[in-house]
Amino acid sequence: MTWLKLALGAVLVLAVGVGVGWGLKTVLQPPSEVLQERAYTLTETSSGEVGDELRLNTAAVWRAQPVARNQAVGTLTSIDISPDQSAGNGARAYTVDGRAVSIAQGDVPMYREIKEKDKGEDVRQLQVMLGALGYYHGRADGEVGSGTVDGIKAWQKALGVDDNGVVGQGDIVFVPTLPARMSIAGDGLTVGSSLNGGEEIINALPTAPRFALRVTSEQAEMIATGTAVKISHEDQVWEGVVGQRNDQADAETIELAVVGADDKPVCGDQCATLSTQSETLLDTVVELVEPVQGVTVPDAAISTDASGEQYVTDESGVKHSVTVKASARGMSVIDGVDEGIRVRLPGEQG
Image 1 (cartoon, rainbow, N blue to C red):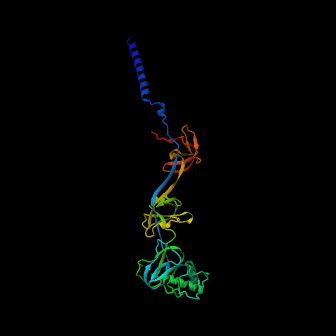
Image 2 (image 1 turned 180 degrees about the vertical axis):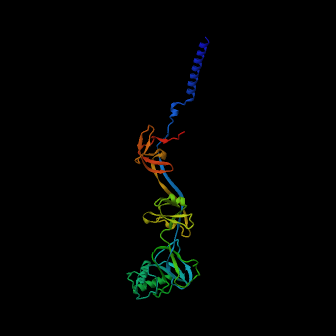
């Protein structure tokens, strides 16, 4: 009897142990779907725009070049040209001892006085100037005949000087290109300065200032040659591209030239609105990645197979080949899937 009780007790303990073990396993073991945690999350493709830009300043700087030397001797009594205004053929540039000195177009400098029967390219340049002013109506043949003398006298009378028909060597300065915006050259050359002849006297401005981005080395690494830029000035937006790189002496600043399309000025026909007295800083958008619209997904949703083909995987596991049109800041515009498709993103493993 005692043996039977012990046996029944052992069976009961074993049964209880099995039951407790099954119960603990049931309570402590997570559901099978938790054990098989998905290695991805889902996101939905959507319509949008991808692009990247930097907002910087572009410096516009006029760089005047000397184009003519003075041949008059005396005191500079007035300055009649301004870099803010364009000067044409025959414009008065300055006066020396009260006598006007005019600008004319030509490559040959004023190396002598011009009088009746003189011949040469300088004479032809003078005839072109007189014709532009309406004082000479003959052919610019490079020879001072009676018609040219009459034109000289009419021009001298209009200037208020002795109309003797002889052009003094100091009466004209020839410059290569007109019309042009010009200024008096030389540091400290002002009304009252003494002129001895031979001084650089006229500076000419180019048709457009030089445009340049001043950036750090880190920014320069982000901006490739040919990158599009948009420059704002007053109510205008000028478009250009990044050109030549120029490292500055301080080793911390890099200049990136900004040029217009087809070698045209960035400022088009609006360059005269920019100050010639000092550099102008202009708000600029540098388009690191040109904005592209389309179906967007996070970059992490795009995979690449062994052949280099890119694809996204939809919710059901089907792979769709895609073409990336643009990528920036972790997002891409793609072709190959429609808007509103749920695609997989890699998930974090525990």
